[in-house]
Picture 1 (spheres, rainbow, N blue to C red):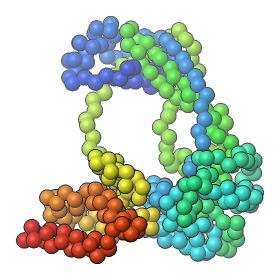
Picture 2 (picture 1 turned 90 degrees about the vertical axis):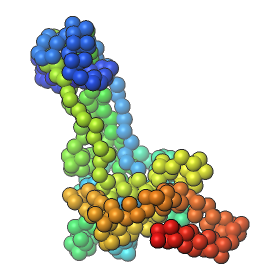
Picture 3 (picture 1 turned 135 degrees about the vertical axis):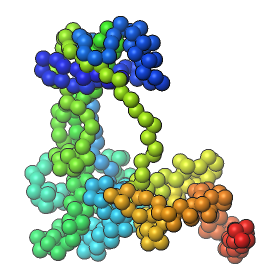
Picture 4 (picture 1 turned 180 degrees about the vertical axis):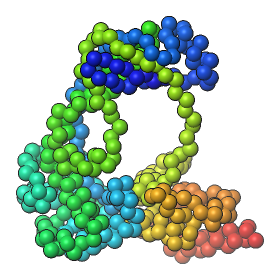
Length: 380
């Protein structure tokens, strides 16, 4: 159940607290609402409780390749492959660091040069910004989590106006996004008040949650982006306890929705977190270590290959399985390992043994050949 609540200074929405579900309208109307001395429709209510807490939000983590690809797909609908090529071009132009990285962390050395170039980045963004977070924080700076390459960050070189003109539109957007995310690390936290209002209608309670910004902090860099993402939080009017309200109680019918279709961004995340789809503890551990299916450098090409072979297609930024793709799924349905992330885990296990000279490369290849022969034999 939901309620539209009107008070002197405005209106807002509330949800039944605690949330409950009902199988039929009769169960809702007579068994529940009637027992609470309330009714469906407009009636008098009262503000029963107000709780306000001050909260803070840190700036976003720095980018690995996968997280950058996901964000760019969400914001600009670019494919993972398009993002990789654009970032590679920015790297070759010596504007961004090496793109094929799987970590969102940097070391203290990178933090020091970013800090030293803070004013240059601010000038590029046409912003007068004050550096507040001057000390490294573990959320961004952790040398123990940087192996070969650190997070994607801007270099000391700032592009000239002529260089910016020569970039593609996607490259300009990606460069700006990376610079903003990096600069945000040095800015104040976003502070806001979270307010919870309890409105009482007879013996029913409806809860409303809203936010009131107190300090924009790092969010000043992402105003346009926030509009595009449409944060679903209502602004609440000023109310006081015991204030009278006009409450329109409504029943809401909802159907169970199927899982949302993947975008390239959400599929990249699913590939990286494939350990969540298996039950075997050892397989989970291995997939966590290797960060799922594929690598930062290959996930985009895996998705691109599926599109080129016409197993999937993109419709309004959603990935949809084609008829050809459905046939492929049916063909491999009986072979569990071919459709399970456990296969990746098993192969990675043995490849690690080979790397430690505990396994034999020839045996590994021989076993794969036997597996293929077994599969092809069972399909004939």
